[in-house]
Image (tube, rainbow, N blue to C red; front, side, top):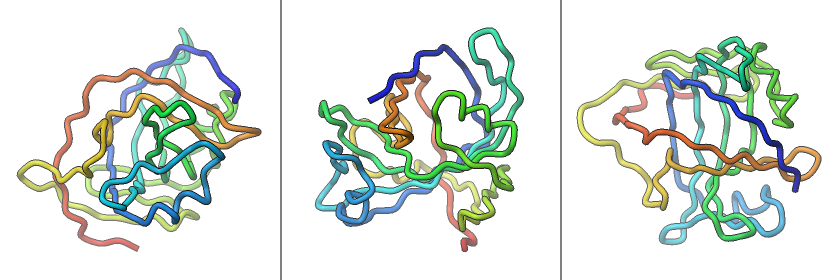
Length: 178
């Protein structure tokens, strides 16, 4: 496993996280040896995440804002810690700098704004409406959106440890998807 050490920061806006449950075997085949899907009552979870990254900094270097969409699942790593495993990631051209950090991103046309997320070439297109009331989050620990470890495959397995403030989620209803 390769470790990349850097200090960075960013702000996320228009973050959309759509999650559904799947059978663990549906994600297990995409995971490296030693990683196990987190399950609840025999079901694991996959999310599509759309976001705009602003105020991006790598150390003291300011980086252009970008949009991204990724597909992820939730796992226990080789040490048993809960983590995100990124299965696929796309960004707008300014986000391609992530390649320098070993993140396997590809560029595509992405639209992310409140109520809409789409990524050409990924088959992601969703329109949603913010609703009143608390969101229905999958029953995993830590809560979805609060994971501090992320992994992905790129010339081996790469790991990213993060720190972030608690997320404030809003309930949304899917209006249209394709």
